[in-house]
Structure formats: C-alpha cells, structure tokens
Amino acid sequence: MELARLANAPSLASGAADIMFVLDGSSSVNAQEFSEALTFISQVVDAFDIAADFTRVGVIQFTHLFVEEFPLNAYSDKASLQQAISSIDQRPGGTLIAPAINYLIDTSFTVAKGARPLSEGIPRIAIFITNGPAFDHPPDTTIDPAISALQASTIIPFSIGVGDAAYADQLLAVAGDPNRVYHVGSYSVIDNIRVPLLWGVREIIELPSSPRPELPLTSRPPTMAPASTQRRSTKKLSTLRAT
Image 1: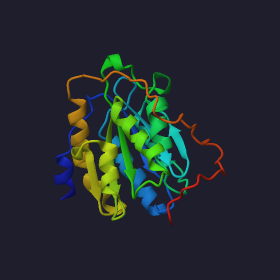
Image 2: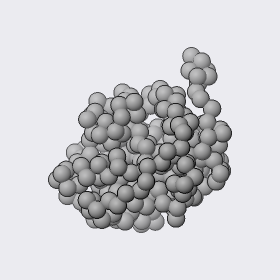
Image 3: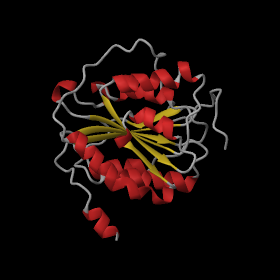
C-alpha cells in the first residue's frame, strides 16, 4: 500500500523553487508530534534536488516568539539539509504567527537570505504547519494585516492543519486558495498528505513564470527580529495558547 501510494508522488528533481517551512512549535504540540512534523518536512524535501541552482529550503519555527532555524542559503545539498531539519529543537510556548509571517515577507524571501531575484521567475513557496489557531491579539492590528500582506506578496502559501483544533478559516486565510489547504487528523498520519502536497507544489513550479511585482507594505507593523537560535528569549508576549 505504501509503495503504491508513493509511486504516485511526482518527481521534482528537475524543478527549482525557494521554499520556507513555517512550523508550529507551541506547547500544544508534544515532543513526539514535533518529531513527526520534522520527519514529514524531511520526507517532503526528499522529493527535490537540493542545490543552489535548483531548490533551496529554509525553516522558521513559531510559538509566542519565532526563530529562523536556518535561511534559504544555509544548505546546498540534501544530506546536510535533512540533518539540519532533524536537529531542530522545539521551543514550546504560545501561538503567535503574525511576526513570523511579517519576517517571512520582509526578510526570508530576500536575496540576502538566499531567495533568487524575482526576475529569475523562481517560485517563492511557504508551507505552514500548525495544530491550532494563532492567538495574535488584537487580530485587526496583528494577524489580519499580516495575512493581507502575505496575499499581496510574491509568496505562494500552503496551509497544513493537524488535528481537530486546526482552525479551518485561518488555514484558508493564510493559504488564500482552498486548493492549497490540507488537513490531517494527527501528526502520526501527516505523511498521508505528502503526495497531494507535492503535486500541489509541482503545479506551482510548472506554472509559467509570472511573478507579481513587490509592493510597498506600509500597513503592517515593523518586522520583529527573530529570537536567537543560540539563546532562547525569556520575553513572553501577551497572548498564549492554552496547553
């Protein structure tokens, strides 16, 4: 059954994309579930040719703060990338996603962080993985403008919701297209959506290049800097997910 399912997975070895995974590390995700999420990311990555001239991958983890685990230009071979993914430590806390989205737009997909120039027509893809709604507050000045800015950007987002607490409306708002929203009952079966996700990404990679122009984003709060990956911040933001 597994071999038959994976036989339908598309080959993306010859494709090129800049892909950021945006991973929920909050306290409602237990250690085993977080490990399963990392395994899923590594298995998705396995479908791509990881190289400077092909696909580049980075990871952001978000809780009540967010951490850029590594940028797009950190790894140019698959073995090193998958080792880095498996070495990510969970940073438990609440669930605030707006600062991570703003950083994704303003910093992650810049040439300085490894994204290819828009003129090259390389798709910029963000894959969000979460097990529940974000609690950014107040939403009209935090998450709402962040999502609007994401939809106005050159980034193509995908949303993956895990478990019964995954908030369908928020998943759709982030993705901007129901065809880029996926839901699975638990992290233990998250691999069930790997093939559909890869087909969705392949469709984006094979689209004719038509990047949207970068627009000035003046309606958002300034981008926050990520927490250090070397030393965890003890500063708590006001709204946390109940655990």
